[in-house]
Length: 304
Image 1 (tube, rainbow, N blue to C red):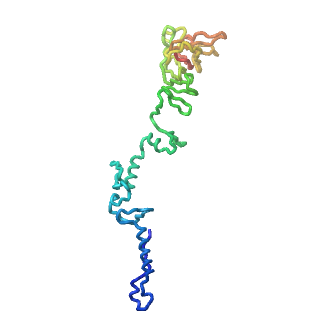
Image 2: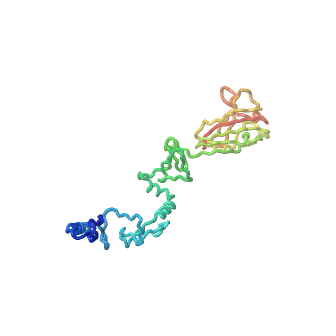
Image 3: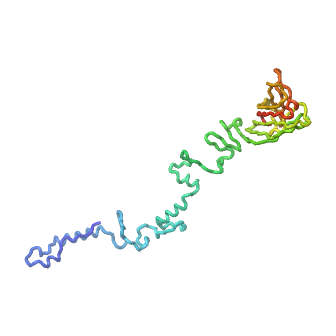
């Protein structure tokens, strides 16, 4: 865009005396002025329906007309300061303040939206920086019955699979607690006990139990004795389980003998024996336990 600049000051010629060559208005001076005017006019937009090229600067200009009247942006009719963008207009611009307010109010959008639209790589994996954590109440499988794998640990159908996904790797039960046991003879005559609380831990089918038999009287019990009331019925197919006594006091047995327990098939019961000969065991009797004997015994067995 070229502005018009006057080259010849024609008014100064009026004050010059006659005969001064500079007083004469030359055709070349007039021609130069008209050329400059023509150039300036040709490089400026018309007032009516102007057409602009290049970059238009409005710095410091206070525009009171609407965009539609100025026809600066085709189709834009207004500038809205609307924090919730409720009008959803296709012909209005938003102020900086309203854009910031809307973004701040909606910055915590859904995880699905964040993953699909906020990830520049296009992926949807969640990557957590070392030392940070994910806190949640529930992690659900995507495909029914597929389970959820956490670094090689498969969690599926209320079970945990360790080292593989076959049934042999399945840990489908774990619990621990207490149970009430009874020391009795084979006729169900109970021996009085200071404590009748046992402790157990069950991992899958394997049950570990520990008990402290502390007799406070034999009552009418006689002959072979046993422990009844184990927390789970013993397996009848997975045999060979055994318990062994550790610390014991006040027993009527020969020193050096070992007391063991044999879990009874298809029953929540353990028979007690003395390993009292090189050839095997004999049943532990009520009299050998004595009326004040103490016997701490523990072992493991397979539940039915």
